[in-house]
Image (cartoon, rainbow, N blue to C red; front, side, top):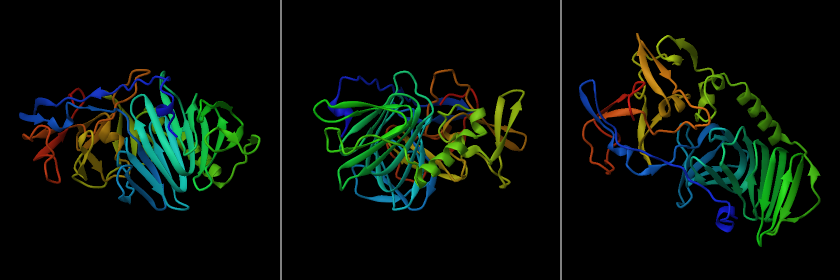
Length: 359
């Protein structure tokens, strides 16, 4: 049940950034990023920070699914399917979504203002670190919809064969919506068991009873809270958690706070070890091979200092969410505007953009 389709009165402003082609002269070459489109694309994505067991991904409008991979951006229409006993963790910035199979989670909407998920089956835990003014977080199940009211810890269990949804609020507050205008505020410290589409309670609310899934979620929360990268980056930089243990932070006299990756390849350079994929609506998107290779290739810039490369995070303004980019590079050559080349890479070459160079 989708709250947004049934209750249009809570207005939603879908703030999306228009991407423009990159034209400039760098190193004496014309760098053209026409694939970066004049079309509108969201500035926020989802990212799998943990895959434990068999997890598949696909598109909500397509029957095929493939094994889930790290560093693959997830967006509107993406589907996550953990097998029985499998677990996954997805970050959308200041919110962490953790799931245990058998289950299915569809991303209905994901942009700068709205996170809307459809939980068809399985266990889903959500931690919201913070919410921006006007931000909307909604979870739909087969028989109800819930709207997050504030930062907190939440859990939903869906049994589609029974038509039941169990909602638990450890911290924070939710509003549950059913059919015929039914709604109910769900405060923290309790769990509810709903059946049918009218918010019928199968039993009175009970106190929380942690199980093995809750214990695993608590462990993941603790790891997230102790993240070293979170000291230097806002949590809205998707994939910041993966930097822990894979490099070192330093203060550079020119660039300020920078991060040096721990690499063993002598000729390593950013955007060299990985692949290109065409992902709508952005176009050519870089998928890096490194286990930490998400945040540094979709945010910030790279600088070579002597023989080493360091990543320079952007300087973010307060209350302004960092914006995702498919790849912060300049392309060498002249691809056809708006076309999708039938090759494995976007053009003849590319170079990482340095601080101050426009994407």
